[in-house]
Image: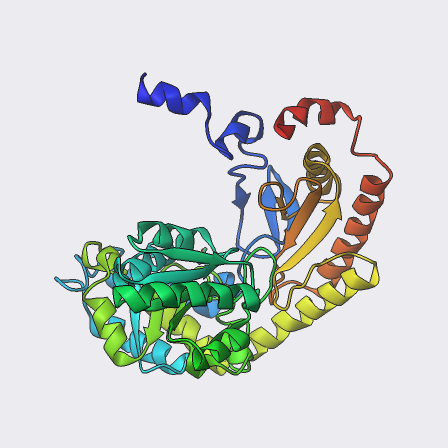
Amino acid sequence: MDLFEKLLQDRGPLGKHSQADEGYFMFPKLEGEIKPRMIWRGKEVLTWSLNNYLGFANHPDVRKADADAAARWGAAYPMGARMMSGNSDQHLQLENELAQFVQKESAYLLNFGYQGVVSIIDALVDRHDVIVYDSDSHACIVDGVRLHMGKRFVYSHNDIESLEKQLKRAERITAESGGGVLVITEGVFGMSGNMGNLKDIVALKKKYNFRIFIDDAHGFGAMGPTGAGAAEAQGVQADIDLYFSTFAKSMASIGAFVAGNRDIIDYLKYNMRSQIFAKSLPMIFVEGARKRLEMLRTQPEHRAKLWTIVNALQSGLREKGFNIGTTTSPVTPVLLRGALSAATILNKDLRENYNIFCSVVIYPVVPKDIIMLRIIPTAVHTLEDVAQTIQAFSEIKHKLDTGAYVNHEYAAKMAMFDA
Ligand SMILES: Cc1ncc(COP(=O)(O)O)c(C=O)c1O
């Protein structure tokens, strides 16, 4: 059979929606400056779907630092991989600053978070080792685990008993193989907003021999007394063996880093294939990240403002009887009970009639009868934005509960997604 023909018969779990939804739900274009109110299909919408937690994306000082770096260095510099020809004083300086900020000895830059995580996992373990990881882990962790040639055990999300059971299994294997154990979790889970149960996980180090690697993409900058992330928030940053964050969220840029003790970071520098065989992070992003990090360190008001909005939004939603799950971070899931077909109409109503743009998460990420509206509050949202959203959500919930989103002509059209 022709390979491409076979692929096009079933375009994949997301691809099968492409014809009906492209430009609307899939690959929508948010235009204008990055701020809470942006332009979508020619009209202004209130956006809650950008991980611009601290509002840095469009901050004038950040924009200036990016523009200055672009004018001075262009987009190319430095050329080549870090190891071969792509190193610079600024890369090294940023690494020192990041390490200091997350209270680790050393840090290493990664040109993309996703590939970075895949490659860190790949570099850390061989077939004698065992990976034990949280069931709700991000795709980049799952892909890193997929490359692993040895055993991998998944534990139920944030469930310490389940983790302990898997650590016992891992121990039995490594006792024979002579390998080690790597535990992987997220600092803040990007869908539920739950923090990883880091305090309880690291407490298990007293009983079991393992190293812990956390992906704190959603915690860095937003969580903890200084913004150093979820482990800092739980008072266990010193017990995290490897700390990772992307620059794609609080830092509102691109790139990432991993931090830990000097010896293990040096090991990773010489063994992460995604960095050895790929171009170094361009100077625009290095200089831009230094500016963002300086602001993160010296201007705690951005984080304070973020939390003002988070607290207003989350307490406002709870007061109105919304189920926002068990979030302990800015990520705010709003869980509604309704069919997949209703989700599409509800989202359309939200965008067309209430001018609110947020991500709607459906099966298989959540159970079939749950519609999850995922809200990402930021430091640049206002209390008026919060009030407008809670009012709109109350109205759409009422419509959902009273059946307004079923037996609608649009529902019939969308029923094909209900497979
Ligand atoms: C938890 C988590 N890890 C890693 C990544 C990937 O980072 P990047 O966008 O820098 O590739 C993301 C998404 O950005 C994420 O949410």
